[in-house]
Length: 394
Length: 218
Image 1 (tube, chains in turn cyan, purple):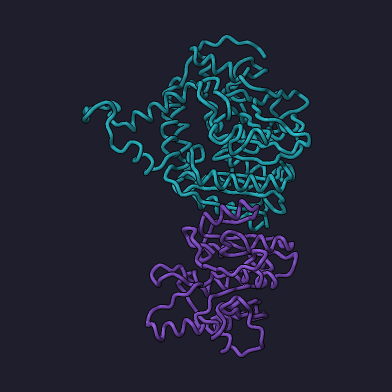
Image 2: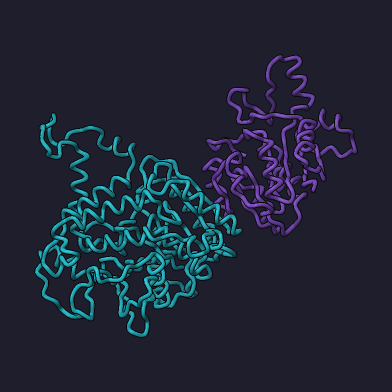
């Protein structure tokens, strides 16, 4: 890959390096294996960065694919190379944990369009030698799943034991179930929907406009021009982060408490703890995430409408499927409310699929799937345990 | 069946030697092997599991998450939901049998639920606690209070069973919704079925539970 001189700060340099030569495994797909995108173009060559945990059994039947959410990545169960923080689903995955890496071979790949080593807008376009920026083709959830299927081929796995994910990861699980039903035994979509609602598209548009309104964004050419749209991306993250929580959770955590002061300062400082918290969320996010990737991945979620690919009838997406499903929602999730999960269940029932569904009572909002939520763990443990017995796994 | 908190509504102590509940066995023998079954109010999934051992392709609906968790851990396909609101989402003729085992009396609209059952399934199987049983009649007549029995242990104000009926009442409802009773079995106090070809008044007096196999009268 061509080395380019980029006028960037140290943090950005690390991110750019991570996009090209990530701290993880990388599958390279050459000119003979293009990724055929929904946008009607081929992405080639391209690469998928991924991590694996545990050991693939002799029968190659114990692989679980984890699909990450919008701002997640493949570092699901190891220290993150940029932030130094533990893997984003350490609580769920590991030796002796619910998704037990002593039993299962766990795979997680960075989505195409991402910024942690899979080809995306911050990767170098081989034709120009410069980062793709906005000349990167728009990708969809289906494109992400196509790339994952190519990775699974690359790993020599025919059928996954399970595909698991929350939020945008859950969308990928549903797309997997529709596109490759014969290649997965079980599906666990959490806190997601088969299409993005108008309200969610609206939230995303606010975030994108915040990025694009930052003068440092430079029409998406900030990496080439040595700038960084930190403020815009931070505002986008702040706005989005509110939607991942809930009124009750914010109130419980922060209430109207002041930050390091006893009374209001009659200024626009971060007087309230909740303001300080959001500012921190925004500023730490820009250290690890690429602004253009944020545009592309939010767009991919906006475009997701599984039924549209099946004449508007969602049930047709799952007709005749042998996959067993466990759909989970959270009572306080206002980004992907339970009614969206019920629509999935409804369609699966209409397709005679083997589906279970549980609505977890929690005030932690959409992000509950990332947290220590005992009821979530209970249903997942039961489902995966019974499925692995049915699959004949030890 | 379990209530919304996961506590059993029916304290059914009647188990056979192999652990299956008597009313489950009665229901199970009405189901043809290899058929598709929806168990509405499936509780911990024991009836569904019994049916699946007999080659039935089963699905469940259960209102309590504890029940859902227990069922899912048994490998059953069970959806957390409410019979009153969620049956409308199921397509016509999706199942061979729709079962409501000791559940219909806990719904808000038993008639609507029964109509949905017969729309979704070619057959319905309903078991009910019979409020016409002699012990309940005597309890009300001499005690002057809403009866409480081993099978129906809760007080009137905390019972989940909000629509009690007698076997005769249920027969009338079936008439009204155009359901044909293909088979009827009453079970006495000891969990034994009343075998004699007895008149309805006898069943209504001595049956503690009624189990009915229904079909649409097309």
